[in-house]
Length: 360
Image (spheres, rainbow, N blue to C red):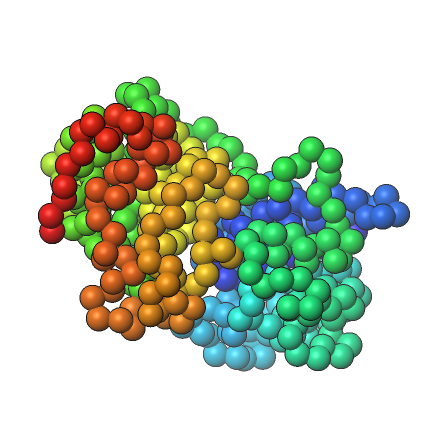
């Protein structure tokens, strides 16, 4: 019996796109036919809720990583020794470190070596010495411009873990019954609009969202607006007087169930976009090009990608838009979002006969 640690130390969306890799480690087989029994998912505070929803995870351990979490905690012996002691006491024999292109697996690999982990796999641009047993080199062993889910799965495969037959490699979360989602479904079809974004550079203006809700309702769609506890003012503005406002009323599991019941989800490049993909719902994604869409767009579901992907902010990874007026997203009109929703619903012809023009 073996225990394998899979590390994904950043946000909810990052954890969700790592799901196929986690399933490969948990349920796949090695060339010799052996299969691990337990997967311990090491994640950051923002990823814990998503980690608990991933199929194949036996145990979740949350650790605030000082080179990934923002704002970063101080590097102390208490922080690092706490992780080393946990890994050593958990009888973990092997680790698969999942990182994005701007992250290094080497600091974590050092701590895992000190904890006695015998085999470690990861991607590293820098020379890894004895820190990695299996080292993939970006741009040499795999292309960087590929969906993040495929990148993570490639790390797992390099470690010797292959998805089991019949697994399509898409994002997935464990289903859970939810009374609120059931009540929404009983009232008929609906579109979800999720206006919030953790990073301001990825947010579409609130009044654009509000106008989109009005247009969707004018075309006969029922709209549900979702958001976190700190976004209740935003969701109230966006929902207006008639949309169903769930701002601050859903935990992550309830949100997943609400998104699963939606016909289409309208959101930015944020965690709920990946959560929608994980429950199989089509997405209209207002995507700011501060990170590449080929890597971070919702994966494995019907998708309409909106936003100027060649704008001046392209690939800057900016948290605050560096271009006055935020043109990459502010140039997208609510009418364009409506059209994208209709395309996903198969209603292009009917929309063409009812075209309206939105004016800011």
